[in-house]
Amino acid sequence: MELDNFEQKWGAKYPYAIRSWRNNWEELTVFFDFPVEIRKIIYTTNLIENLNGKIRKYTKNKLSFPNDDALKKSVYLAINEIQKKWYQTIWKWALIFNQFITIFENRIQV
Image (cartoon, rainbow, N blue to C red; front, side, top):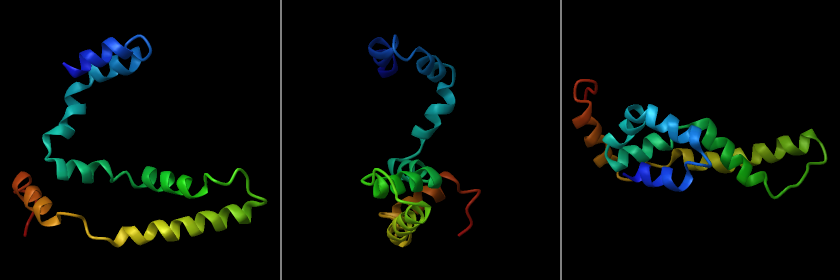
């Protein structure tokens, strides 16, 4: 129903996207079969895209760099800041782990 509403509003501007969503709806909606906590982890696991976005966040204030070394140093410092969050624990991990065990009981050995 929401896809129909979306199509009414945006169908003229994005007909290819809507046609693609309709043709691949079963594959696209598998994501929603998982609990919200697991979806959050799945959504954020595209590491390269995530890293690139965060590097852009740290470097976007610079309009240009005087040379390649300045750019490399800026990216290096950005990655050092980003890396600090990689070692934080996942919020509600016990709940998420129990959901994984329930959903994938044949694939997870505890």
